[in-house]
Image (cartoon, rainbow, N blue to C red; front, side, top):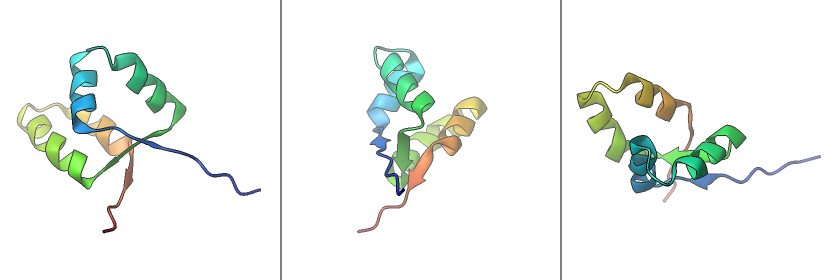
Length: 73
């Protein structure tokens, strides 16, 4: 049986709200726990530099664990 799994690409602005503990925390937490969260190079390019400057090692580790899809254009 071939199973297809759907993923939810979480945009940078939603990640930022999630990290700040804003209203999107439950939504993103549920997607992460279910294994449906994904990201791409653009989102990581927007988020990781600031995380590195602030030495947010736990957040960097979290972002590296999220499935990343390559952008094929």
